[in-house]
Length: 229
Image (cartoon, rainbow, N blue to C red; front, side, top):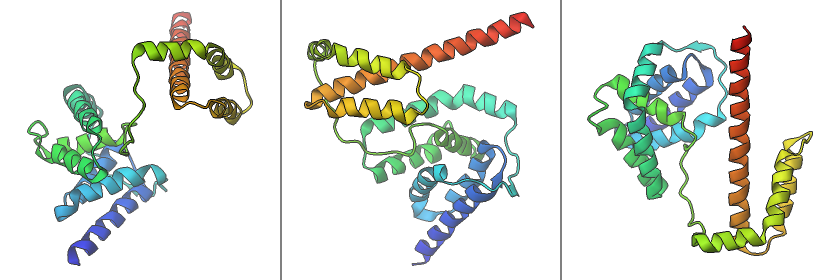
């Protein structure tokens, strides 16, 4: 009972930090790390609580968080440890563990990896995981897999649908929901699950290309501005 009350108090402390903190996210992560390490045998549970609830909380910025990391610290830690943290997170996600097992293993990495040999580094690892788009974690159902020749055949048969989807993605609209609803309608009109999977794969591919193009245009524009200046 005492352990449960302690855990609940720590979760409330984490929420309070998220709801009131003003400061850099890496420094906020340091404050939250120091809450999690006080959780006894429920550290992984509170790690999960933090990562699953943080996105839903908006801070009032009324409480100043002590600055722990300089910009040089952040740069050096990302350079030296970013790939290790990214790689471990990716490896754990690929295992498709049950949620509890995933967070157990993730906390084990933060606490026991010999490279993260200081409180400051461990808290940085928590921060780097926190800002990753792949958290919070979800265990996924099995997806549809198919041989490449089957994928090509289905895509060929759906060529007009794919062209229309490309047009919808690039057609100007007043709201994104207009574009999304048109694509959803096209998806609903497909009867086979494999067709739906191929259609969605093509949409994701087209969306990635559009994002890449916009990024390139923005970079070219910024370079042109620098030249003109």
